[in-house]
Length: 34
Image (tube, rainbow, N blue to C red; front, side, top):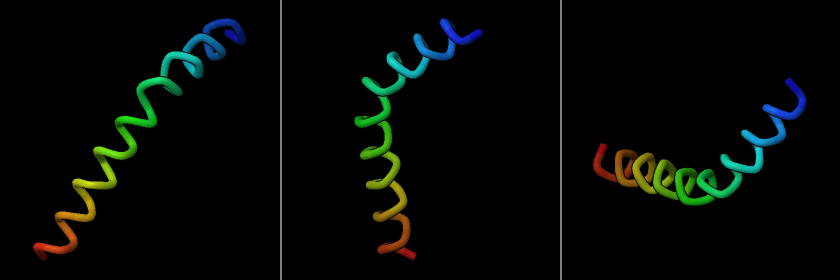
């Protein structure tokens, strides 16, 4: 489990920075248009 979670963390940390920014932009644009 620890090895898997560590691998997931490493994998997601790469994608998360991009995904978090995309999600933030979606939320921001949604809030602005609302």
